[in-house]
Image 1 (cartoon, rainbow, N blue to C red):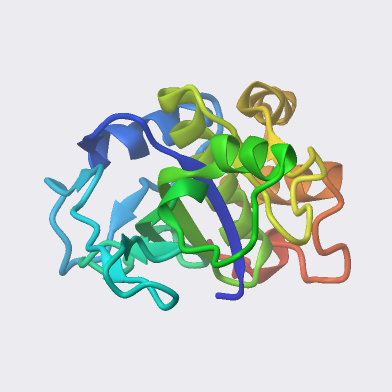
Image 2: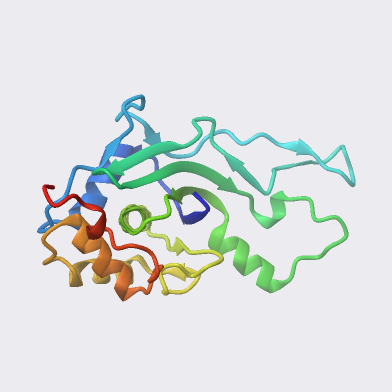
Length: 211
């Protein structure tokens, strides 16, 4: 799962509420439920967790937070049907004033970046197929909408909406494909619009004729 999307969170909430919001984008699209792997509880709360400080390297008497910390639960697998699955975790991206910078003096641009991305966030690892990418996009859009934040699409501009994507723009794309007759058809149409992995097999092509 080398592909990833993130969004900051500002409130704690049950994972079942988050997944219900993600599924609401598929109101008229037939789809399998969004479910957790059998070993996980639907009572999981997505929210802040304790982040330990560590001694500084330049001055061991000073305590700092790691640049990025992950919650102790590890990854929670979420799936829909046979092919769409993602790994959800919660992390903490330290503010610039919480990280040891040595002799480096932060710039105004550094501060803007920190303000936009620091704090607790949901991180989604994505299996390398179109159905999983569509599922991840639905879930991360729900995270951002519910928390009044942006989708952090770092590195590869997977959604073609910029590094800090407006969830309203992403939700608008979902609506344009609300007449799909299956989740796989929706996933393929969504991926075509954002030009995601055009060389990969379509999600619908993976289904058996009897499905």
